[in-house]
Length: 195
Length: 226
Image 1 (cartoon, rainbow over the protein chains, first blue to last red):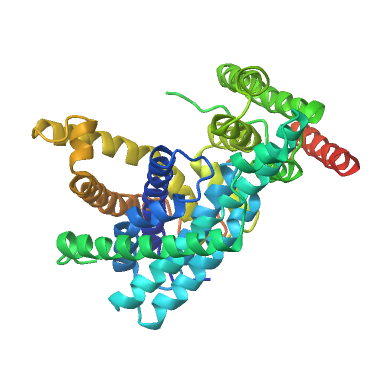
Image 2 (image 1 turned 30 degrees about the vertical axis):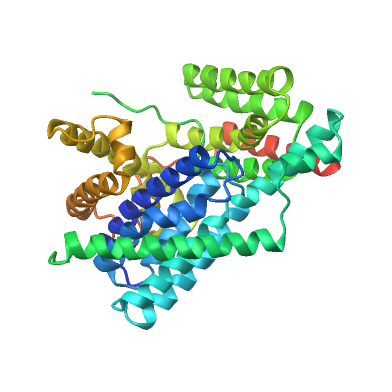
């Protein structure tokens, strides 16, 4: 399918594990700082932390398929950890688009790689879908318990176009900041490292 | 020498079990069906002689139930419990897969269901490496402490960006070294060869697998009829 060697595949696997860890830390920070379980800020915080992993992966592989496979692997992890099967789709789709974008400049252009990272960061929106599913279950339970709709609306933040646009913007800003910081760290520590 | 017990269930059936649990998540199973699903999951661990794990999951499930119905009524904490309880069957089934199969078996299983080698090798490497990263992270923190920096949470909060740099960069260096070592190991094990791999133990679908598959089929029918 892809022209990747065994070393590239192992690199992808290990960096996926690291990417998963940075994402999990982002989720944790989001839960502590924003005291919110709906995890809406998790993709933004993950994007802020994962830049260095992403750019070092690109630097070490520079082949089409690496980013896509990370997306598939992370998506599969969402699938295994109860994040609902549909989480898989955005993760793979955005990773593939990010891979195609980075490929246009043969993974060498800093700006294009940064754009690719911003696109890739949107893949983490998948697990948030679960919240809407669980929310429905939660609302159903509140109704069962005799709570009125005014109370429910206070607890549950409704899913609206305005909210989604805001989230998309926040993720973009965080991905740019995280990406630039990631590129800075890669340049600082791994500039002279041969592949 | 410790010899791993061969699992009673075929790896492909374990994959189907995870997919089935995702399906139950989508259908928001509750009441009798939910209890029934959990009971079967606990039994699966007993079949594999994992009594403690079965008990641990049972206690977590019971705690979640009790918290939901008697202690916490509303608010964010309640939402956490409802969400976690919905995800719990998938988490248990994934744990069942990883605690009763070796990485080699998972890789072989993924090959059997025709997942491309690129994805299956990356996936298995990822699962193999999460515990290693944890170990490396602890080691890096000990290293920082031995140099007299970042002793506690307050130190980290005072300068989080520097702490991030001081931990992520050594982690990446560790990862790069692990890539080299693992590549050499994988070459000696001929993981990347294109030809069909020979199997020492050929696992066939047995009565346990058929029973589990039949149970899942019946549950799907029941969920549809509900």
